[in-house]
Amino acid sequence: MVNAMTVDVEDYFQVSAFDHVVDRDAWPGMESRVVANTERLLQLFDEFDVRGTFFVLGWVAERHPSLVRRIVAQGHELASHGYGHRLVYSQTPDEFRNDVRRAKRLLEDAGGVEVRGYRAPSFSVTSRSLWALDVLLEEQYRYDASIFPIRHDRYGIPDAPRWPHTIERPAGRVYEVPGSTVRLGGTNLPVAGGGYFRVLPYAWTRFGISRVNRLERQPVVFYLHPWEIDPDQPRLQAGVLSRFRHYRNLHQTENRLRRLMRDFQFAPLASVLPGCAA
Image (tube, rainbow, N blue to C red; front, top):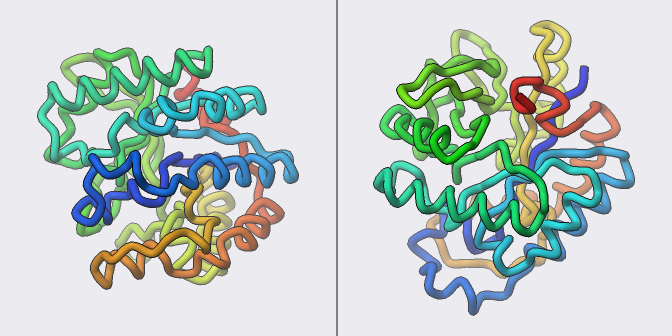
């Protein structure tokens, strides 16, 4: 079973947990580490002959187009993380349209390839922002990877389908790629990566991916961020829960990622799921 490797390319100070700590007007003056961290991931993937899907923030692509070109040149799929890393449900439909349109244009200009996929910041396509799927279709995106079928304080649609599927919307049909989960005791539990990969023991990730692959015969969609392999990043003064989620076990992520790539096979979303390439 080949699973999907995905990366949300954003800098450490752009995460949703720090929205009230670092004003967007201050972003240009922050120490940027996204290029070095993404290049480190590219080296690791090359070492293990892994190709993935990189959901790149338009703000990053605008300032570092050579990074986008390198991602494409090394055989990875290029996709969109929007432009300004704003939660979808905090925007109006017009604001969201401008955000995803701007990001798509920047990415396609820099990478020289069509951008088919989108993943919302913090999986923020929820039951109150499903209108975003219509906007994505109208802006010529082919698939979305923003719905997480779990309960969370910031995101999630707990009763959403667990497997990739087509959603009928007024604007047409969009292919949805949900965050991966294991179902135990009638509850969906996340095994998809990110903070769950860092905070929980590696044995949980290995168990979850193995269970989904072997018992349910489905691929897992794994995700991480470049800043998650950077234990030396500056510390920001956020709330206790946000600091825990962001900084916990950063020093272990690279070694865990190496174990993951030894234990399982990975490829880009468009290679693993035909609906993403349609």
